[in-house]
Image (cartoon, rainbow, N blue to C red):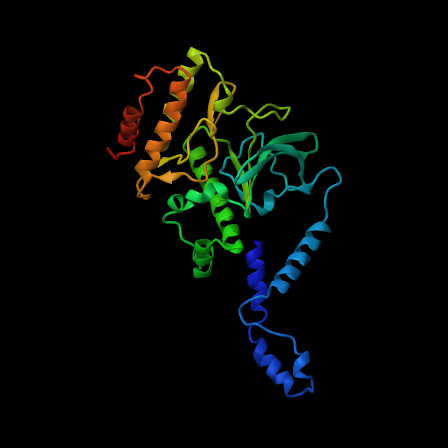
Length: 322
């Protein structure tokens, strides 16, 4: 249960509290000075802290496995697309154990997680969005255009960037990335398999070796001429797959692509942009293409091969927008 849902359930228990207190007041001689303050529809900061402490105490005293940090959260999470990969452990009795941090970022941190069941185990990347500091999301208005919350209170909180609103933004980005990865995986795009989503945590296929060493970002590689051309062809094929689906990455760079065993894999997709629904869709596509073309040009890709305007025109044609 999300924390703000817990708050709303707590608040609903006080509906009609004023009437109850008035009825009790007629039968008692309690002094007005001793009466506890009541507030309809809102919690005091003290009560919020008390509820949070109760929640933390419950979590700290929860049953935990001896050989891990927690039991598998698979059963309580939004699960990835079927058929699930053979390497994935889905037993509810499995144990999750954190092995260390893979990457820190401005909006999220990525941890290495091992999920084990008996003598079977798989490595997962646990991406956890932070709600208290979203420096990277200064552009979120453009990405989130058209996304609206069902409750006006939540919409106002997001607009005003309250603490509650920032929590909602973090969850929106998590939901958006999980949905984007699920969609891209299903159409055959080279992305990590999205294992599950729970709150603001994403569990993804770990892209790296069996020892827990993450694959390098494209920006960290130094490909020779043949390797560079092969990676370029893979990139164009990936961008065409996205264009056929009517979307673009939205923040593409050599840091949002990984190279694992010669295969180019696209990552970090919370801001995926719909080319048609978003008024700035073509602008985002053009920026994506120019950013990544600039990297390939800096590594020696001939200009006539990696010409940005020609690639944008091709992608728009594939998307049916030429």
